[in-house]
Length: 379
Image (spheres, one colour):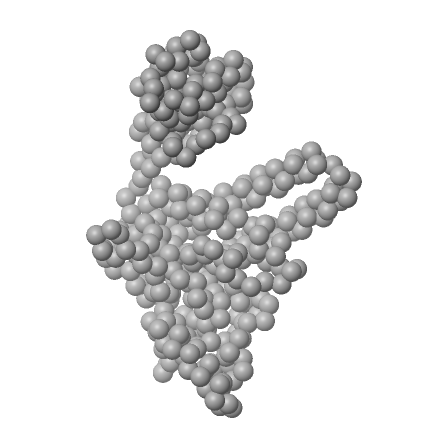
C-alpha cells in the first residue's frame, strides 16, 4: 500500500521552484521533446527536470500551470537509517517511518511529500461485522458490532463545530473580511480532518479487537440524490462523508481488517428485528409490526451490520466482485441472538428483496385504497 507523509522542511527552494515551473511550461508546449537536454539552459538538475517533464508532458489534459512541486524519483534518493538524503539538492531530513520502499519525494515552499510503500497485514477470518452508519446530525458515526453486541456513538461535537463556524462565517461575510474567511475555512477543515482521523482509528481498532469486518454504506452521489429542506442543506454539504470513508479504508487495509460496501436503501427505515418498514421520527425509531423501539441511528447501524445487499462491480471480463477489500469466501456471519429475527418474521439481511417487494405492494395497495396498510409503513 502507498502512503504519503507530509513533513515541514524549513528550507528555501524558491529558486528551484521557479525553474521547475519553467520546465513544466516547456513540457506542455513541447510534448515531443521530453528530455532534460532540451531544458539544460534553465539550470534545474536533470534528476528533477526529467521527472517534471515526464509528469506534465505525458498529461495531455494539462494546459495551464499554477504551481509546480520539485519531484525526485526513487533512484535519486538515499534512504538511510532514520533519514532520507537527496544528493541533487544536498538535503537530508529525518524520516523514521517503517516502510518497504521510498517511491518519490515532492517539495513545495513549505513541505516535503514523501511517498512510501508500506506492508499490509494479512486479513483474518471474521467473527462478525461492524456496521457503520454515517450521519450529518447528532453523532456523525454510529457503529454496531455483531460479535460483541455493542453500539458505539462517535463524533457528537462535529455538528456543534459546523454550527459555530457557520455563525463566524456569516459575521465575517457581513464585515467583508475575505482573507479571514479563508483562514476560518482552513481551520474548520483541519479540525474536521483531525476528527475523521480519530474516528476512523477508533472504528478500525474496534473491528480488529473483536475480529470483525467493516460494512459501510455506498453514499456516492447522496448530495444530488437526496431531497433536503433548506435548513438541512448546510449540514449535508459541510460534513466530509468521503473523507471518513477513505481514512477508514486505508487504516483497515494496513491493519488487515476487511471492508465491504452495501446499498443504502432502507437501512434507516427498516426494522432490524423483523425486517419490515417502521416509523422514523428524528432520532427515534419505532416498528408498528413487532413493537421494537430504538435510537434511529443504532437501528440503522444494525441493519448495515447484518445486511447482505452488497454493492457488486463487474470487471471487463464479466467477473462480478463485491466492492471492498474482502478476500474471503463466506460473507454472511450470523448476528448475535439478541439481534436475530422475531419468530415467524423474515430478517432484514436475509429478505432484502422482500423489503423492496413489500414496498411496491404497499404502494399498489395505497393506490387501490386498501385501509389495512398502516400509514407509518409508508414513510
